[in-house]
Image (cartoon, rainbow, N blue to C red):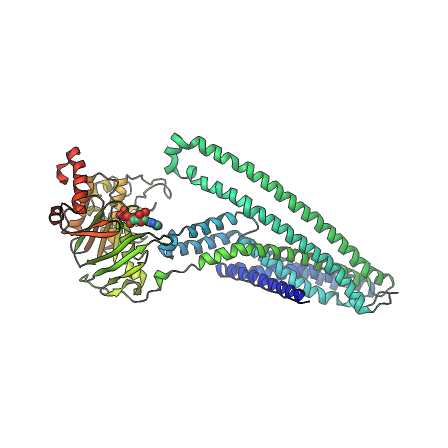
Length: 625
Ligand code: ADP
């Protein structure tokens, strides 16, 4: 007994949590697209009412015909009511279909907003990308996603209203006992309802089993094949791979991709097989129900206990209830499966952004009296137990120029990522004018920095929009920034000046620019921002040492008065700085100016300098020595 009760409670719990999950899915849909959520309910209601009303009106006409009344008036009323409701339903349907077609854009807008505001740490986290890929691959299947959710919501609402209104409409037939049957009326009705319900339960179970089979196919097999396809996609869709694919990888790609249609074809054949088998069994259940319904009401009619109008009303209503129930249960099962999609989307849209939790405003200071201090900072990347920074102490005083040098992988970029709060230190703290930077409003805090990273990115927008990082800008300021970084001459050759598009993604007239030119635009962007802290994190690493040295020294003369950090693995590039810190394996191992540091022949600086100078000597690049 105890086990049964527990099983019962468990089942009830499952149903409740299922309903809750489906409800959550509907809430998320409405949050992303209010009107689609609303239309799915209105349409569900109208889809229930329109056919029921048609049945009712049909029965009314028969009743008037058989028992007398104003037939013209009844027919006219039937046609008018039907027409009005059908038109209304069609009108809502158009909006509903349009909404379903467009809802993915609204979802994409919500997803892209999230991706842009979310902590960098979360953005970089492979789990975030896993979620995104999963969502993208899952919504390729018709049964998943928000458009599907809207459809399920409509069907469930329709089923609910059909049952409710149908029960009221057909109540009359249940009040009359079957002739010649001695068992009480209550029991007769119960047996009839139990039989109908039994068939329905069977149908629902069938649907659920079928749906989970289909789901398994789409989840495990088809999705992984699609993932494979998506992984290949950039290799031919993105022209930056074009040269390499032509030279090296074409054959490998072709044979890789050739397997996709074959694999998918196999999965879809099974898909079709399952769907057909469910369809056939459902049809059989419908026929059995119809037989029962007509039997139940037919006998009563035969003995004159109910009227012809009652037969029409009852048979029509019960059929609608039956199809409504099967359909809504089937869609409920699918909605349950769709909750896997909904949950991931919801999780994604609710990703926490700790960086945004600071509230303290950053004091605006014309004198740029900002001081940043890195205090006993150690850092491990999330999920890694290796310290990439260990016990780093550093003070950046106003107007100071600091060079950070060290071999690749010594932790220089990581330090910049901590200063800009892309990550928070694992140990220690970073302060701005003595206050932990975590306390500041993040956007205001970020406004203090102009950083040019090694892997900076430009957008395929106009040069001016890139420099201003905005669609509105001050022409003069943009031109001035470009001039300062030495882009003036190239600009003169641009077809539309600062309004020339770079790259061809958005404009046919877009121009291709070289890596060096891109760097200049990126540096102009940093200058345009006019932030009190400027950081160059090796955006010039792809250039030769002389060009890097030139750019660094030139940049230094431009940003006079601001605090600047120059990062490089080439010691020569930062030689002009009075204050150089040397990083090695995540620690600051030396600090001083070039002349002081080079004197310590046991030090890392000397070691690196000698190794690099050796190369310059071989190349006879005296200017760097
Ligand atoms: P540098 O700028 O001096 O070349 P980085 O700060 O980029 O060095 O890297 C320091 C160390 O941190 C390297 O060992 C690198 O592999 C590791 N690292 C960099 N980024 C990540 C990351 N997102 N996750 C884990 N480890 C990382």
